Amino acid sequence: MAQFYSTRKPQQRKASRPASPLTQQTVVGLDHQGRGVVRGKSGVRFVHGALPGEVIDLQPQGKYEANLLTLHQAAEDRVSPPCPYYDKCGGCDLQHLALPAQRRHKQQVVSELLMKFAGITAQHWLEPLVAEAWAYRRRLRLATHWDAKRRRLRLGLRARASKEIVEMDTCAIAQAELNQLLPALRAFLPTLALVNMLGHVELLQTNQVMVILRLKSQPSQADKAALKQFAQEQKVAVWLHCGDMAATPEALVNNLPPRYESVGAELDFQPGDFLQAHAELNQLMVAQALSWLAPAPDEKILELYAGSGNFTIPMALQGAQVTAIEGVPSMVQRLQQNAARYGVTLDAAHADLEQDWQAYAWAHQGFNKVLLDPARAGAPHAIHEVARRQPQRVIYISCAPDTLARDAKVLAAADYQLRQAQIIDMFPQTHHIECLMWFEREA
Image (cartoon, rainbow, N blue to C red; front, side, top):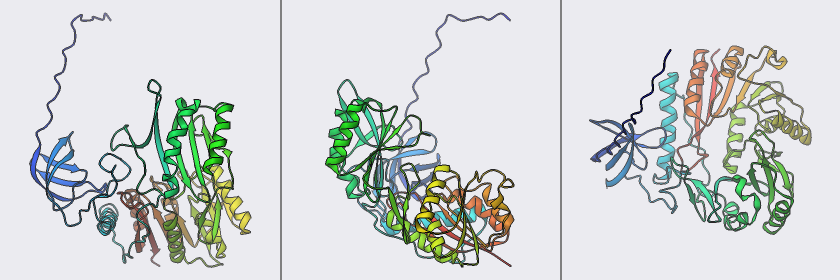
């Protein structure tokens, strides 16, 4: 077939004019991401920083988004954000909403999603589990950008809906030990040759402060020597995560075996393993889950997405017969090490829980109770396998109410009732939600 090409230049598209601002708009609610909802003749708009009952002017951005321009009438629950970086930083999005109202909103989100997608309500809502709402975060992941021409390193958090880096002297929700490191890191990292291959920097506080550097390749011996000196001066451990994301972080300077606290146990982990951001609330959550689970020595309990043993070891220490399944092989090893260190007997195995379970020997046992703590994607296949086995009780810990509601629908169809529910305010000042659910099967 002959092909013909035009020599004419394509017409240039005219830049679209920005939409006109919308004035005197009433905010009618908050969406599940903590944005104000405005309904008008032009449709629905979601406005960051706006609260229900407020009257605002807004600037439309795209089809549904909008920016807050002017606040004419403030809500009673509005507070002044204490963080000087709040207007730009993407780390927090609810500092302008009073803490009690944040918690009410989060419970309402979960309730609405459970009704909308599963058609169920909790028989009883407990008061939220709460702890320190500022300076609580024990993990801080910092973005970096090296400007070789100006010999300048930008180190901070990403701006909201942007790749721009917001540099900061302190983070209001990070633990003090992490904030104290920021000036030293900002001064030290540009002195290293590795600065031009630095991806991100993660700071972690458990039984020691840890600095984890994400690098494209191994640093030079000179840089390693400088890092060791830095670790000694700052009294921190330094780990290197080199190569692709699947690579295992390696300890360059490690003063103590990395451990975090659960209920009645200190558990081994490594950088890259999942850890809850709020150390105090993690223990309160584990204690509440075990209280609901009420493990008895003669009961067989199946735990899914077990990690390194955050729930497993406390359950086993209470005498439960636990079968713990985890999808990351290295975390299964850590779980087995933790069990051996505490002298508890349990079955720990690696499995892809979102594939058919027939090939797994453990899946053919009978279990009285199940505890699961999946990632944000929930348990789309595993929840069907759980319902098919008909355990008497299911304790579900979730960090994503939408996938929780999807999975709850499966349990409801299998005659499970939502006995109790509770919000865990694991992420104060943000819209992110952790919750705990107790499902009981009707005889």
